[in-house]
Image (cartoon, rainbow, N blue to C red; front, side, top):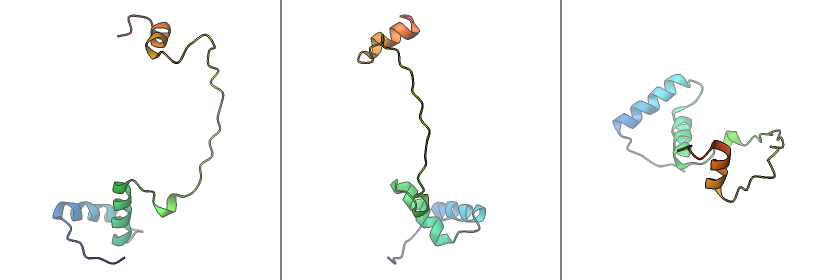
Length: 81
């Protein structure tokens, strides 16, 4: 999509500073990446899946995780506050 935007001076200055540090990107790419980050969307280049190895936590059977106050009192002591 093609459109015309009026960018405030402070925003343009910030975008130019990013462009100076990321010389391999065009101004258009920097503006689009910045807008995507602001909107909370992922950039098209970040679709690579990350695999994490998980480990069992070994949770204690005698602790009840339904009552957080009681759990904190038992683990950290009643004077934790």
